[in-house]
Length: 381
View: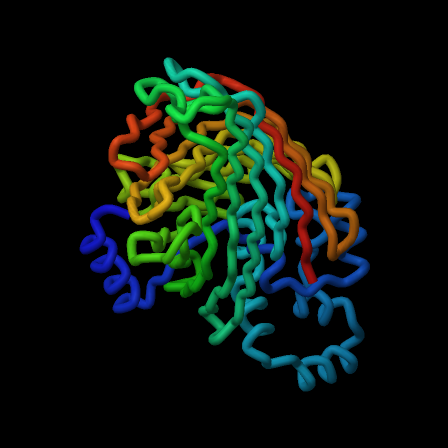
């Protein structure tokens, strides 16, 4: 939440350029029309796009019909904006990134974690909601709307954060360290996608929201707007090159960073998705509805917290970051419901914590390695 003026400049630039930013999304669910026949074919082929990626191709259907029926279908063709977009860019949208549901409900767990050279430990319980809704506005462009809420509840041991702070002076059990805390990120998502030509997509998304412990009255420093702009270029049928820039607080000292990556379907049902400096994943779809994956990601944010003192007027920023490696599985139970789970290890990361009091000696340092797990339920329609 530092560099406020610079963030305002970014926001103004995004508006002027009609570029309002990228976030986790599934191209598959956006613009697809599925027939039962193609759904079964996708299941049998083991396509990485899954059953939901089976595409309705009106031209192929027409060629399979007798001449007179084909002419009637052509005369009665659907010319809606969504259909025209789908016919022009459907395959591009299907292949540019892996499946991700329209609405995702996720629970995360990091038990018995600690900061190196800091006494005590903590358990992290995360509870996330992420929803996106695209609206096609022209045959070559669409708007993206969404909401998100990412919660972090820290259950700390009595000794956590006492390095330099000492025990509570009022006697009894407890410490003067960093006590139990709940941090919340919640906001909206607004974005724009435009095809500059058939093989080049420009996307921009902004995610204005509250990043706070939600204690006391909110101020402008409780708000942030992680944003990004990215070009996706289709080099061939199976390879998409990606580059752009993003602003967020995952890296405390580098909120502004370039994005560089690719999505590559190496073989039928096998793909590699990379977007530096935050994610990499290798996934295998043995059937059209089930995938297995191995990957790594960097996650985190900056939050504004209040003092535990009675006045509650003192405020300060805290930063949290985790570097994770995982193995995972996704299964589409039906066209509407999907399930995903991941388990892995915290490889690294960095925490910089305070309770908001100016006299508090910050609990700051690298994370020790530890267990990470999450489960999620996805919803499509």
